[in-house]
Length: 253
Image (cartoon, rainbow, N blue to C red; front, side):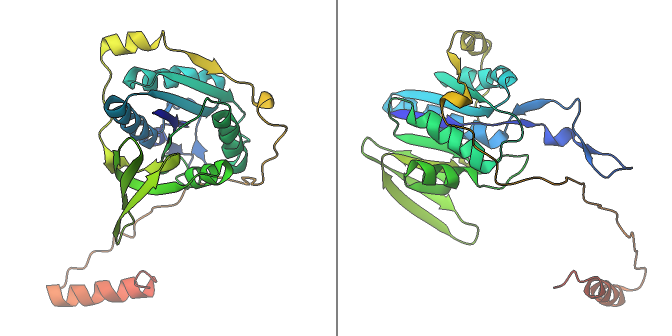
């Protein structure tokens, strides 16, 4: 079973602060890491390999220094990694094109796993875009996967309903954070990850110049100031005033 996991290096969003003067996020000096849900994808890939055998390959588009964070995924149990360095100007179209080209250069694949979304942008676009470019079926929002030799079954969480979907191989799945609890590598696994191969692939060797189709004009924080209105009336009167105020502010639709 050849399993590919797509992973992304992101800033640690829990450390982002908003500049009060410009209302822009301050990103300088913030730690980076692998997107949390991508770790769930790696964990699921390792579990499938432990059951059916095979190999787990991590593929990532991003800065070359991402190899330090990719090592964590190798310590979790991935067998190898490929990094395609590319500047931050790459949009979903560029990144999915590079991922598809890198995956097509591999020696076949059965399962491709992605996080349902990255924790920085959380658009949920990469899995579907990649499946379309590769021409393979996709199963989104998988919260449970049961892989067998010839096919797999996935339980999907669509909010108001649950759906069970079956597919033969190859297939791409985007997983939710509820699918598992990523393992914490032991010291020996962390040390062993240093000996696992990480290949840096020049993006120009995969595709020609690919221009972004999306341009980010600006990024600003959202004001979360509270009105701090307190109703001291009896309960019935306080509830009536609360509902009236929410209605005036348009909070009730």
